[in-house]
Length: 330
Image 1 (cartoon, rainbow, N blue to C red):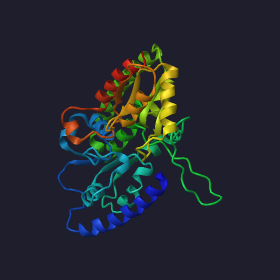
Image 2: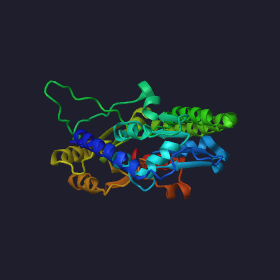
Image 3: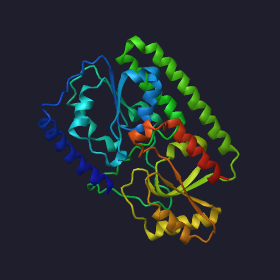
């Protein structure tokens, strides 16, 4: 079960953090006296938003992304070096969902008492959505104690909405400006310019989807795009919720999704980055609609630091996703 597994993982991580910190006593954990602003993010989207807020100042900033080797949010385990990096930074940005349960222990090790901390789900407030279990989707039910109700889990994938991105960059701008007040005006100007780019791409999405022949997406995979589909009034079907730890779909789920392909006349089954596409392939083989194709939407969960160095950005990834949607929805 997903929740039980994460509870155990959280306990193990807490132990590992304590051991790692004790073992790393010789690691420098005080705020570096190098004259630079130190910004640490867990995920790539927040890293790239920070780059946009910093603008030209990024070259003089120590900006780090912890999930930089293709490991996604749901399976990330911080090292002692990661904890030390967080402890001494000026600004720390993380998602704040169940996958980030380790952060609470990490922040206890903070040596920079003036650190600005941005919890993206906390910033979202009432805008945050709970995970949605759709018809036909495999659902991992939590083993609850007798008399207890299963708690709804927040959907962590807040970055997969251009509208959220605009909202959240304000929070990053506020945090970075508080840590470096001297350049706050520059950061606000950079943020405003970036938000115009986000709004322009959001307008492109609306234009494409408003005139699309189809309004339904079908994923033979996890589904982390709830914020995106809700922004534009799209419907969807999928094998698993976005944070699912499952990798094998039941016969019932495969059959349900294959029947939806036939019922809706869909010619594309979607996967997310990092998928082996086995479930999508099985759905297409089970469906009777001919000529189906598998296409991938980038959930920005497996982006590496090398990808970022090679020029990948949040905007370029979301633009690429729009190009896929143009094909899938028409």
